[in-house]
Length: 84
Image 1 (cartoon, helix red, strand yellow):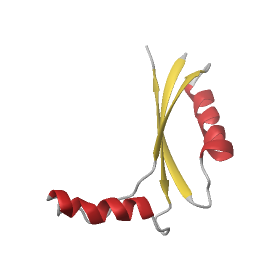
Image 2: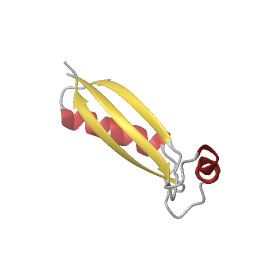
Image 3: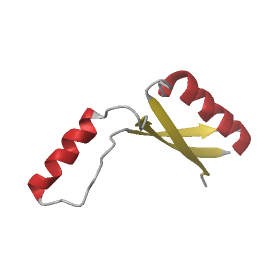
Image 4: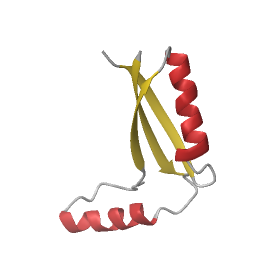
């Protein structure tokens, strides 16, 4: 079966996010004033061929924990959907 994993990686909440701060500070320049905080991260899409959704989850977890995410500085979430 084919799956699509959509992974979002963000800096940990306790860490300074200089890109987010820059964006937040400059939003007022374009008359967007209701934003109170901005976090900038990465979005990764993985296309997988796995025998089951459980196997796809294991592969995504392995990819995140061993390559894609620095757990000292980042957190991640993901969704996996079966493709037709």
